[in-house]
Image 1 (cartoon, rainbow, N blue to C red):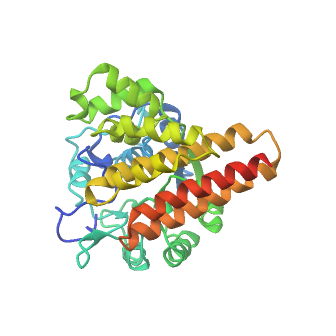
Image 2 (image 1 turned 45 degrees about the vertical axis):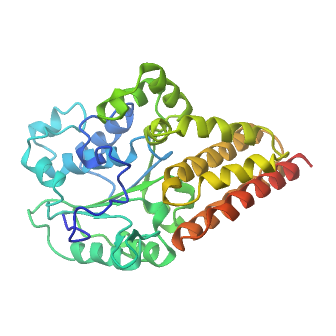
Length: 360
């Protein structure tokens, strides 16, 4: 695998806090049907060359993608006994391929993700065209070990227009025995031409019991949490291990409850409370709280849209518009390191306006 940077100690955009990276996660909880589907497709010897693994952030999409990549590279012969008798996509952690993937040293697997900017000392906010060009260079070469060449992209949501079109050209005319595994938190926003050339594998949110098991597997500090706290975080995380972990980190649960109370009052807004909340999210120390805020807001919009889906389509349009505006403003705020206060105020103003328009 080609490293995207020389310094392995810099932050990885696809790693959450101090949790094990998906490539090092040995067990995958709650997605037996998805594993079976990938395994059956591989055994059929008619494996689609491009897959979009979609679903809510933090439910195990990347872990599934890494499991599949590891399985294919460890057992490139679909007629082997290991493939024929496999019950899932697990590979022993001491397998040579598993060790090389864990150390990012397998030459036939490339990882595309948001990279580290040594000038700003921050992660880029997008997957850029040069990141995809490195992938293109790999696929122009013969597989180093005579088997598969695999691209793992985490996530497709981070592609900009230029990098998405560059990836499309490669997917349109892929070399033989090539496999593209693309994680997507919101598959509907992936470039339509990429979606049309890919097989969609949608993962459902995890059950709270599976979220708890995944957090315990992740080790400290989550494994030290009480059963009550683990259960409360799992239930509020709505099937996402990532969000449950965030809620357990610091004052996440208290912040989520505070946000839910504000959102429940819409279209009425307690501006004193909103200003107080905005003050909490200022500065580097507020990064995790900021992400919890955005996740809670997006979850509220999604839940509101689901509840309203049986009504008039016109009532859904205001929420779709405010979702896109919030997402764009959040990206701009992070990209240019802007003050978060105006963003928080505009989020609640936009949500209030959407709630009023939906009721009209």
